[in-house]
Image (cartoon, rainbow, N blue to C red):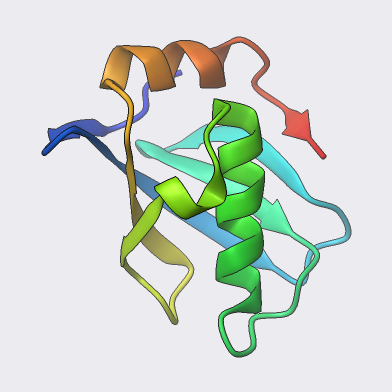
Length: 101
């Protein structure tokens, strides 16, 4: 998996490509350096963003409240801050490239 993980203050930044309103919740792997994420939640009033953070937090073993959405609140291309080193994030996401919840 060739994710574009950028070191950032106390953790790293990860680009996401999100599809809200999907048939199932899933982390589908990498595409052009971004992590592809699908959530069943509709993209209204931040609900899909909250579900993305819950799904990502579950896979990474951190509470969703520890993650921060830095960019892309109303767009499918997002940037999230994760309080883990890039090599740890890469290892956790590479362990099972199609994680679902």
